[in-house]
Structure formats: structure tokens, C-alpha cells
Image 1 (spheres, each protein chain N blue to C red):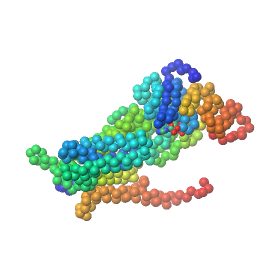
Image 2 (cartoon, helix red, strand yellow; image 1 turned 90 degrees about the vertical axis):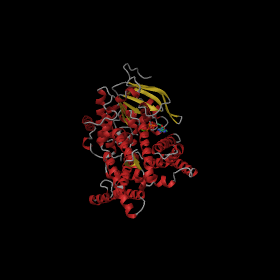
Image 3 (cartoon, rainbow over the protein chains, first blue to last red; image 1 turned 180 degrees about the horizontal axis):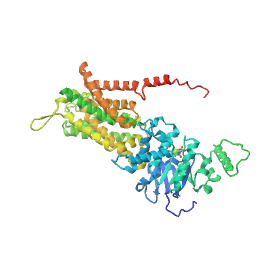
Image 4 (spheres, rainbow over the protein chains, first blue to last red; image 1 turned 60 degrees about the vertical axis):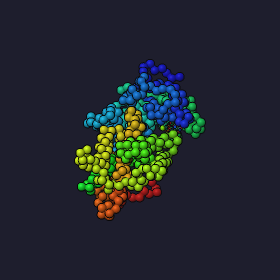
Length: 269
Length: 299
Ligand SMILES: Nc1ncnc2c1ncn2[C@@H]1O[C@H](COP(=O)(O)OP(=O)(O)OP(=O)(O)O)[C@@H](O)[C@H]1O
Ligand SMILES: [Mg+2]
């Protein structure tokens, strides 16, 4: 169903199935993503979005299928891949500063036994500047707000200087102004042929943010350019069964296409 | 001279344990140290029965293997049997420790090992077991050399693997994403804990090892927000408790190991009260001086 990609896909997932205790949480996923696009992954809680990212990164075993990045197995291209885990995945009381955490993004480039050098610190500081956190470089990470923690993780991912970025809910807890600034940053990156894949929950901003969408609910519902893929029918199929949500999604689509001039705004989702 | 030997040995044990303890605490695995230090008992006994000697190297090997087995069992019960980590630690080490105790009592006649020795150790005997050259020159206590070697190895291990140990401790998933195997470094670290525990048991006993694995590291954790500083502070705390513990024991004419464990607890309590960052006292002071209004119900 999805359009052909003529150049080498940044990511190719073929016939992927992932199961926990024999219960499949991802089923028969087949997709190809082009390079140089900002791509959203959407789907309800438990749809397998984080699982998809973790599997692609090689953090979870796959029951069947394969994953290729730039037409290579993951282990050949680790240096070109960057990952932003969900913020809750680490202990923020750890004795480390913001700078320490961002520098961890450089470890992959450094390799075993090599120490962090000034050049790495410069890169890290530059990345902190991009996410508006340079003033916090020496701050202890336990003294950050949730949004600042998220931006620290983003800076760490940027410090990897990768070609493809996987971000698991990078905007959770980030204020609207910062979210806009970061989206601007990500869009600039895609213009430099970087590929950015983002798990996203706010359906309202999908059409504004993403070039492509992956709509996921255990199975792949759809994957393609946002204009042709983010349709009401696909949304219903993705979020289907949840009645209140369904009507909201319908509402949302109606508003997207026919803006409500009377301004009777209903809190969406 | 004997005083110095004892204090030096104790300091080396305390520093080795303190360094490893920092990682254990931050990995929320403080009790793994406890588990390994108990679970190596059957390893020590079996190694002794097989080799028939109290040769340290054989014991180190036997106990090191059991230590790894313990780590593996804990991981297995946690991942495959879906038991919580604390429960799988509890099941594993009590079971292995029990086997050790049964083995000792079974072979009590033939084995020159007794529970007291293994559990409590006797650091006062350190100067009695001197390392001699074939010509009869005295090099110093054997335990001192063993602990010196262990300490050097641990310092080298941390110095060379610093980045990897730090990252796999803070964010194992991100480490794996970079291609740094969290599992590999986990087992290396647990191997180091096993070796240290076993090397220490003869001189200080299993119970003191547990105190030293957790006490100095926990004290250091309260005193700083920087990981490197935490490692250094854990060593300083280790040396402090060894010195003070020894002299308290001499003064009270009591057990040296017991006094050192006691001082470890005391130092931790002091850090808890007076730490500039986490201290109870300073938090109180800050609260009163800032005069923060209590959050009202209206907000
Ligand atoms: N370690 C695990 N063991 C067993 N089941 C798991 C595990 N991790 C996730 N699951 C299950 O896999 C399914 C997908 O989880 P996943 O975390 O990928 O969802 P998600 O789409 O990221 O959801 P959210 O929007 O809440 O982040 C869920 O049903 C979850 O219960
Ligand atoms: Mg998720």
C-alpha cells in the first residue's frame, strides 16, 4: 500500500514480529522509511511504539523478520544511529551533571579506553545550546524539571551526531514554546538529510510537524506521507474500539479540514 | 608493625569494597553484594574439599565461580521466572548459603574451616600468616599482598572501563544502543565483587564485607553530586573506618571487624546528619532560613 522509495531506505523493517511471553505485541510489521524526513509514530498506549523503536535498536529480540538500516544490519551502523529513551527509564538522582549526561552521547564515537576530550565537550556544549540548556551545563540532574530532563536527553542524542534519530516521546512534559523550538531544530536536521523518527501522542500537531507518519496498533495500520496517510479511516483503525476517543478523532479531522469559524473549541483528547 | 599490617589490610579491603559498592548502590543492587558474600560459602568449601588445601588461589577460583553462578541465578529468576529482583536475590543466596553451612557441618571433621572463621573472619591473625621467600626472608603478611593485588586490579578495572561502567550503570538501554553491552559489564562487575568478597573473607569475614560494600559507598553518595568524587570519597571513608575501627577495638579490647563495621555505621549516620547536600540538618536550616510558605490548599 505504501509508495515506493526509489533511493536506499533509511530504515527497512520486514515481516517483524515481537512477542513477550509468546504474546505478540508487534505483529507482521513491514515498512520502509525514506531518508531526510521527519517521521511520527502514533498509536494508543500499549500499541507497541516503544517496542518498535527498541527492537529496531536491537535492544529486544525479534521473534521473526529482520531490520536493516541504510541496507545494513544494525551492528554495522551503530555509529550513525541515535536514541532518546523515554525519560522515566533512568534514575535522575544519579550523581551526574547535565554535562556528564550529554557527554555520554560521545561515548559511542570514542570507543573503549579512550577518554573524553575538549573537542567532545565543545560538541556537548553546542548541543546544549541548541536545546536552550547551556546555562544548566553544570547543574546536578536531580535538580532539573521534567522538561529540562527531556531536553538533556535530546542534547545527548544530538551529541551523537548521527544520521538517524529515534526519539521516544521527546515532548512529554516539554512546554509548548520549547516543543516548537525543538521541532524547528529537527526540521532543520531533516533538511541536512538526517532522518528523525519521533513517537508522538498529540494528534492535533501531527499534520504540522511530520512529513511522514507510522500508524501503529500491534499491527501496522499505515505508513506513508502525512497528507495521504493521516486520514480519518486510518485513525479509526488505529484508535478503534475506544468510543469516546473515536468521536474526538472524528472531531479533530473535521476541524483540520473545515476550520470551525464559530470558535466553539472543544478540548481535544 | 603488626598494627600497621592490620590497618593497611583493612584499608585495602575497605577501599576495594567501597569502590565496587558505589556501582552496586547506583545500580540498586546493594543487596547483590550481600548475596554474593554469603553465596560464595559453598564455593569455598567445595574448592577446599577438592583441593584439600586452604591455598588462597584455589578458594578464589571456587568462590569466584559460585559468585558468577549467583549473579546468573539472580538474573535468571528475575528475567525468566519474572520474580522481583529483591525476591530473586533473597531466594538465591539463602539457598546457596544453606548448602555451604550444611557442607561445613557435614565435613566438619575433615575440614579446617568453621562457620565462625568464615562469617566473622579474624583480621587480628593477618600478621601471623607471613609470606616467606624460599631463603626465609619475610615479605609481610600474605593477606596484605592478596588485598593489594585485588585493590590494584579494581582500580585498573575502573580506570580503563570508567566510561562503560558509568554508562551501563546510569542508562543500560542507551549503552546497548551505542553497542556497549550492558550484560557484559554487569557480569564483569559482578565478577569483581565475587573476587573481592572471597579475597576479603579470610581476613575480615563475610559480615564485615557486606558492611564495607555498602557503608562507605552510601556515605559517599550522601556527600557529593559527582560520580568521580563519590568514588574518591568512598575510599577515604574506607580508610577512615579502618583506622578508627582498629583503635576503637584496641581501646575496648574487642573484635576489630566488629569495631570497623560499627564505625562504618557511625560515619554513615554522621553523613546523614551533616551532609551539605542531602543532610538532615542542612535541609532543616535551609527550610527555616528560606521561610518558604507552606503550600496552601488554594493552589
Ligand atoms: N518487558 C515487557 N514484558 C512484557 N510485556 C511488555 C514489556 N514491555 C512492554 N510490554 C507490553 O507490550 C505492549 C507494548 O508496549 P510499548 O511500551 O511498546 O507500548 P507503547 O506504544 O510505547 O505505549 P505508551 O504510549 O504507553 O508508551 C504493551 O501491551 C505492554 O504491556
Ligand atoms: Mg512507550
